[in-house]
Length: 84
Image (cartoon, rainbow, N blue to C red; front, side, top):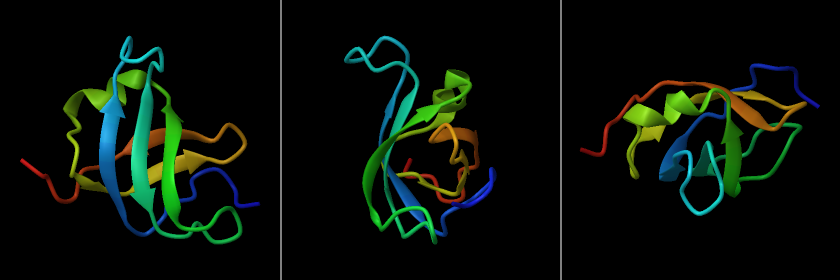
């Protein structure tokens, strides 16, 4: 299992789910490449800590993110190609 801070190479945001939407507060749905030694390429929903990281994100943005594998939670996000 990778250590905290693992960053997949390429992701597109399918949907940022902000607090209160669909009963799933603070989550990010992405389509990502393989995370070596952790999981295959797939569409996946991740918890985001803190949820405020979602405030500036839009569907279609291309991002790298920092994943804490022990919690399966995103802890840092950077937009490298904005969809808007």
